[in-house]
Length: 369
Ligand code: SF4
Image (cartoon, rainbow, N blue to C red):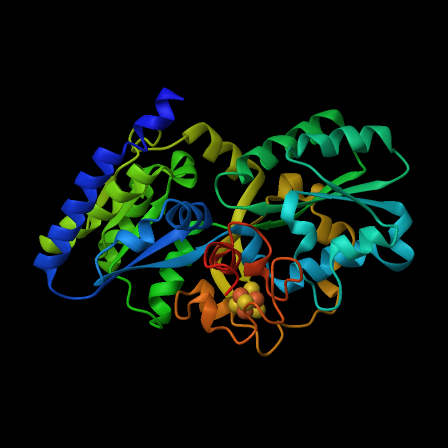
């Protein structure tokens, strides 16, 4: 516990808050900082950071929750494998909250309740085991996540190829972070003064990956871990840059994040997958922001194997403000469905599904709207 306690030390937190307030008062203008990642959002709420920030510093949530950004069409295509005639010949596997993400008319969870074989796992390796145990069935893994998780799935695909597993495939709904940040700023909907970059994704990417972005858009980017002191230090470093008219990449998480990241993991990722245009829930298609299979591994692409590109899909309900929430334009309580039609128990939009979703975090820490 000593390690964690050090990163929650109230006396250091007080000193950092004092530094933030001092910088904010000298800035004498309003500042919006986007915490890109849902883990930061939850930690900011849970530790009370939101309430101690000076009035001219606003934290806004970004599109860094993989559950939230998975497009309706991706869910509909996966759900099609769990329905109708296909149902008994497939085992659908994915990470935790994905089964609750709404498709146009149903979800994997609802199909599971009506008899579909949908399995939740924390390890995509389990899928290989299920493929070996069920040679008469197709095991389809719904792969979601950012640079943190996709290298692991790439390793599993390589293993499946080596093992000659012909009944295993992956639906690649992965996302890449830097292109999404570019799309946010290019969209011009919201003025963001700086970015608090996610610790876990940055362990893979390396701090240097944000440099072209920071330089192109002239925005400070600071990598931060998820403990309260990490976040306070990250905010303080962003304000320091703004005060000094700088737009650099800072690293408030140097105990875990290096300059170049995990090159082995990134090489493995690019051996199996390559960047491709990808749909984001509420944000539309963002160029080069997803991962598709490379030719050598195309046999493991569930979209190709089952002709899923042809599955008809719908769109988000008209009242749902998930797109605006994910772009930081709207705060969750401003959505007309927040806490009324849409709650963590009965999510209408994807941002209410995962505990790391902006709407779910607001709902939980604001007492339900
Ligand atoms: S309250 Fe529900 S519908 Fe509205 S933005 Fe949040 S998740 Fe989407």
